[in-house]
Picture (cartoon, rainbow, N blue to C red):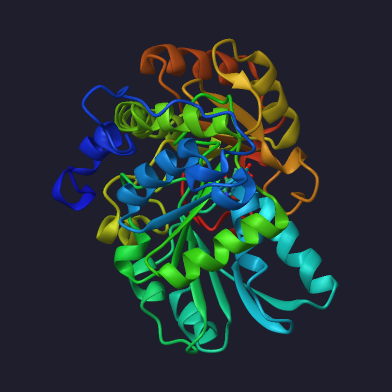
Length: 393
Ligand SMILES: *Cc1c(COP(=O)(O)O)cnc(C)c1O
């Protein structure tokens, strides 16, 4: 059988997770729709013992990250299981910009007195190194959602820390094609497979991957006890999605790089945030260890919320919808979401999909050009603390 570390990552996306292929077996592990099994089969009940379909996805993703994957019903299912490992009174270091569900989970546990949350600016590596020495969980998300700031993962994953402390990296926006945090010293890498791994906006699934068999065992125990188990169809579809991950992600990333350049010089755009642009505040950090810059762009429409909403309404190809990582491009004004009022009001997060780049550009350009800039003053530089990108045009 082929080993994940003996082939290129994009080869593993195709050959991994096919189970124990006997000569006359099917090429794909089918969706095994079963809650319980014959008692002689070695499995009893799928919440305890998994199904062959999740195990195929775990073998595939584990190989991509060079660790042991434990899959959950959603990204938040995996993240919740990790937070549940914390002792009462723990200290959690959390980026100032991260997925709002994670911030909500951490803040809710803080309010209940389960742990203490310390927010740290993504790009301030010295502050991360200092907090890592006291934290029980160092939570990193890179690139961050939605400001697309890149953490210095090589430095922070290798930081000095308390013996039982965990460093976890939410690598959803990067995918294993672009960065592998376990190789940099992280204890856990987390994916919302709902996004690029699945890639078709038709499922919810998540996973945590680790090189520690003991940690994987504790997460499986949490999954069994809390019941955040994946469905067989979701695991099957996510496995199928990963088969084309490299093709989709390379296409979308190349288009994103081209669109980011054009957006940056569009008169209706005040700020363009894309880690691949040399002007991006954490571009130099990203270049040191990332194999690519991803397919998300956040940009501020000049004039704020109203013209940004008008752009979303005027788009014809790009869908006005939340989430990211699908074959179809999606856009949304993040500050319009509950709990996101701290974001720049005109910030649009664009998830670039697999359509032709010239069609995407024509769509963006017509929507931006139709949008009246309400007054020239409103196109001025936003507050530096909000953007993380002072001076970027
Ligand atoms: C979507 C997302 C999550 C949550 O994943 P679900 O599958 O929606 O539960 C976590 N982190 C990041 C960065 C995400 O984009």
